[in-house]
Length: 243
Image 1 (tube, rainbow, N blue to C red):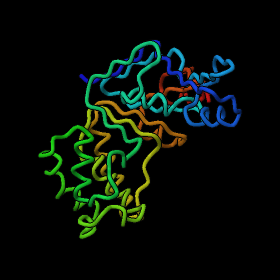
Image 2 (tube, rainbow, N blue to C red):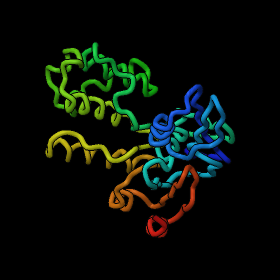
Image 3 (cartoon, rainbow, N blue to C red):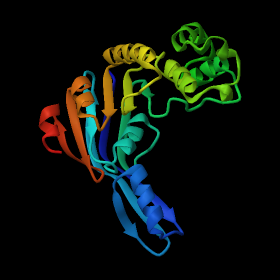
Image 4 (cartoon, rainbow, N blue to C red):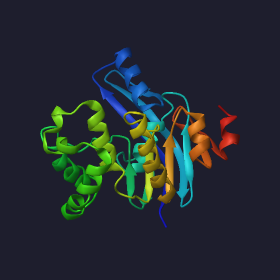
């Protein structure tokens, strides 16, 4: 069965040849954690520190914590995008990371070509990706725009297409940084139904969110991060009381 296990996972980032406070603060804002060792030429930011976490089939986990706590970094470790600087991350199962829906897409290509490109980026064969085109075309409601370069799209059209492709593949494990808002009211409701179905079919869901309502709605377990460490892990309401 799909599972993820982190054992004493630590993630560190180093900045060389800069001791600027503004750069250090910007990195903290982006990756979380705290400033570690510092010398004349290097600043080390510890984004995650000694994280032990096991996720198993049936887990619906809400990652909570203030900005800079390390939630996004943890999601990237769970996806395999970041390797721990020390410790280990063992990932068993197909992971769909909805952290950057448009990653792998090319704005100079048509929408139709980008469906195939993004599908292959998500791990499909070219044949499998091409087979998704009719369903995604219907879902995205882009019509003839699918045959023109994506650079001509509005931001809303781009998001519709990227969301359609990213949610067309059913993964074992879903990682999401905040709930996705897509388009006008009618399309947003259709998108919510699609993502609810995706969640229901997934073995494991990890949702990083500042919305406690979303965590209560979708999750049966919560993990509270503070300065790159897990400080609470358990039933949602119990962990929310630790905020």
